[in-house]
Image 1 (cartoon, rainbow, N blue to C red):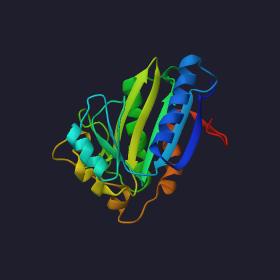
Image 2 (image 1 turned 180 degrees about the vertical axis):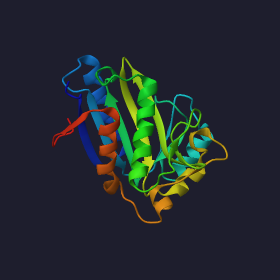
Image 3 (image 1 turned 90 degrees about the vertical axis):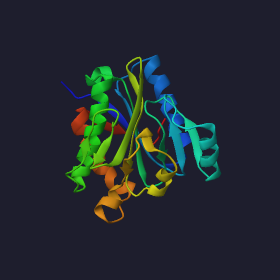
Image 4 (image 1 turned 135 degrees about the vertical axis):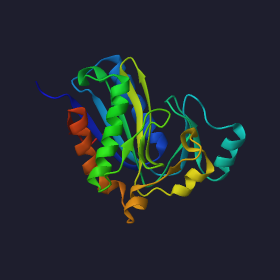
Length: 225
């Protein structure tokens, strides 16, 4: 039996709003009428600093005003989780997938995203990366989170996904309690490997990990559509 096909869409460095708009178009498409593909894998590097909150909130109005005064966007989202940061030097992966042809449920989809990030860290020379159970969902190196995960699923179709720190300016995380987890830290591939690791460098290895984990093929075209 052939593997399910997933459309690969690499947006390069774009405003976060552009990723959200494309995600919404794919959501409407998949929920209206399933097509020959299982969905799309949307990848980008955020062009500017953005704080996002999940369904459980995570920021007061005073905190939101303070973060905007720093020059960052603040966006409430319909994903799981609390507050986190997105910005340049970070790989954002939003799989908009119909889970049924992939043989997945929401819980196994989250586990698959974690497995992709763990595998990427291994391929980059960091064998100590581990996924942890809730409320520590994501991928960790010791007590430092390197990859945050927050997803949404409606009518078997997923949105949002993961954010993996490659060369992210980690000082942006100092203005919040990332994911509401007191006493934990954040890290990046660059921090751990003690060299500059770009988003472009890790994408081929991430795609390798995604295909292995989701047991799918990736197709691409020039237009994100």
